[in-house]
Amino acid sequence: MILSDLGAEVFKIEQPGSGDEARKWGPPFVKDSKASCYFVSLNRNKKSVCINLKSPHGIKVIKDLAKLSDVLVENYVPGKLDKLGLGYNDFKDIAPQLVYLSLTGYGPIGPYSKRPGYDVIAASIGGLLDITGPLNGDPCKVGVAMTDLATGLFAHGAIMAALIQRSKTGLGQKIDCNLLSTQVASLINIGSNYLNAGTKAKRWGTAHESIVPYETFKTKDGYFTIGAGSDQQFKLLCERLNVSSIFEDIRFSNNTLRVKNRTILIDELNKLFRNKTTSELISLFDGSGIPYGQVNSIEQVFSDPHIKEIGLVKEMSLSDGSVVRVVGPPVLYSDSLNSVRAPPPSLGQHTDQVLSEVLNYSQKEIQKLKNNGDIQ
Image 1 (cartoon, rainbow, N blue to C red):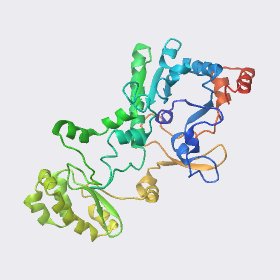
Image 2 (tube, rainbow, N blue to C red; image 1 turned 90 degrees about the vertical axis):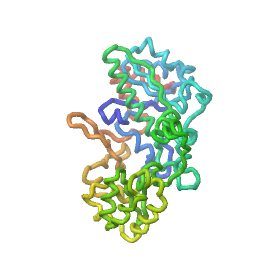
Image 3 (spheres, rainbow, N blue to C red; image 1 turned 180 degrees about the horizontal axis):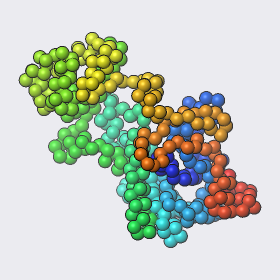
Image 4 (cartoon, rainbow, N blue to C red; image 1 turned 45 degrees about the horizontal axis):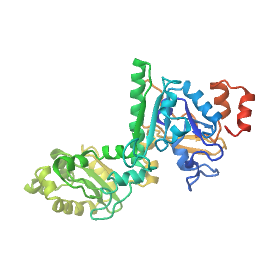
């Protein structure tokens, strides 16, 4: 979707009849529509082309598209497309310019390579669930599919890098991205703590293992998050809360000591935050130089004045006439396109258009493929 926002023409290849499983992931569904909200969130600016990958004629259509394409992205279990005649080696000679990216659960090698993979499974094996959740509580799944999202971002960067290399060599290449490797790489400092200091991670709730105070506090009417990442920010925090005695306490004079005496300090801060409303705290810390923010519900996120002013939410109409709203691209370019241009497609909406306008198939050829169940 990132590439399509940037202007790439993206053909979403779907199975005739059923299509992407995400089309069925609901409720919730869009009001007055059968469209899955989940599907809507991920498929703008794409063209749906229904091709039967188990049909020799369907495979030929895929290969004809590949000859004219820059990138092919697939997310089958390793080896599945090779059996269908659609593996990387099947394209290498007929489409040498093609960047072929495989998105899998665990990569092409290793004991897990043949397993199907979902975000929460990779997040489980890769340690994310083990370090997420309340202090001394059970492992928790993150609220959104962060491992999926991170893998997509790595894949986006890999594709762009491969296209830059192709501009120099004229040749594409195969790229492998997988959920588990992405998740382990995303452990960042937690992984480094174990690898280099032998520190076993634990769940901290909203707190930070190595920085104090850096967590969420309960207020009179909600929750409020503070991140004092330096001694100077801690000083500013104490000044705004009018508690110079805490700043002057030798037990809290630097971050190392604040981590050591975390429980004592957080207990003191909890008393202060509990006695103020969230809006009072926002006013108190405004302009302070301290990173802070209220904990918004999803409803509050989309009514937040900052989100509204930057115009992040976009509105569009589906092919059935229903209106949907989506979160647009978060990145702004001064001189490049990055926009929501087209709504998520209905199943097979663009099959005829792509085969006739891109591949120059005749209407007779297209109809024959339809009659044979090769396309929809």
